[in-house]
Amino acid sequence: MTKLLEWLLGVSFVGIAWGLVTFDLLDLQLPSVCKEVAWPIPVYLLVVFGCYSLATVGYRVATFNDCEDAAKELQAQIKEAKEDLKQKGLKM
Amino acid sequence: SAAVQVSSVMRSTNKSQQRGDKYSVLLPTYNERENLPLIIWLLVKYFGDSGYDFEIIVIDDGSPDGTLQVAEQLQKIYGEDRILLRPRAKKLGLGTAYIHGIQHATGNFVIIMDADLSHHPKFIPRFIEKQKEGGYDLVSGTRYRGDGGVYGWDLRRKLISRGANFLTQVLLRPGASDLTGSFRLYKKEVLERLVERCVSKGYVFQMEMIVRARQLGYSVGEVPISFVDRVYGESKLGGNEIVSFVKGLLTLFATT
Image (cartoon, rainbow over all chains, first blue to last red; front, side):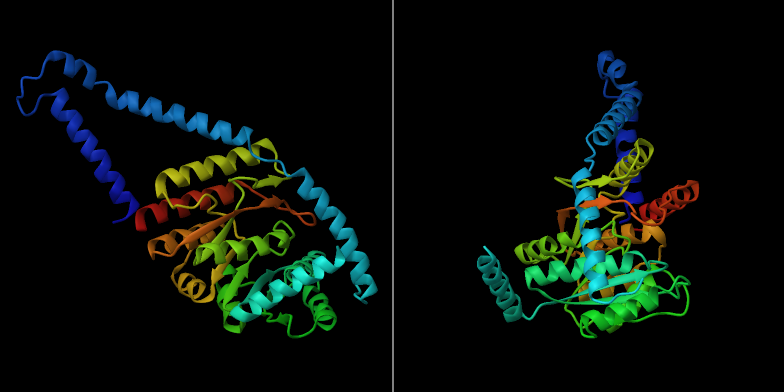
């Protein structure tokens, strides 16, 4: 199964469950509280997911390591390499 | 302490010789005259220190800047058993460069990395240890975990990178944290099978490799790496790259 199908399956499962409760399609005589809670849930989910995404990406950008030391080490090694290669007879 | 170092080198040499493992490093190059000697010097240094058997396969795609001539000089310095030159007449893309390189590789493991010094050979011994530790089919370097990171990226670049990575994780759940990185160690036969199946280009190619690896049930290990953006030459991330990345991502989303 492709990831697209997995998503469609998941979304339609949630959608069906939501529709059943909100419009009481099975005539279960659910208390009206259930309906009131259920109908805005898709919007809640979207908002929560959006917030989670922004927070996660924001946090990860803020904590992205800057490898200053790695850059310095590399610069020093480049110098060393150039001298050594020159000695070994490399012509650039 | 020199004696200790020598004996530890000899120990690890014996260890890897007993197992008969050999590591072939594929270096696809295009106009890397400045960087090639440096990356090869570093590779020789770190393989020498750790004692693993290795060869470096330079696949130059007809660079007009004379990369191949520099590579020939390096071959004279380090020997024809260490540096193999397998040039091609013109630029033909990464996937075919790997196929071309694998055909000439004598190692049972293949390491792929960029020749522009953004991937540091000091991590290779860690890749090898990680592979041995878990018997992994492939070990991928990751900029997004542990001590991993980048150097030389501004906020915009970091934001795009993290955003794209998050989106990919949500859509594909690939079980690896760095999908677009191209510093990896593969069992040779695993790389052969993957390259056959991968059709994408550019960033998406690396992503497809790891997604297909998961699909085929291969195990993936990860090692944090520091990515130091190009020292010589330019690296670009423009609108075109982003559009083709999104296209590739959606293609993988719909087909894997």
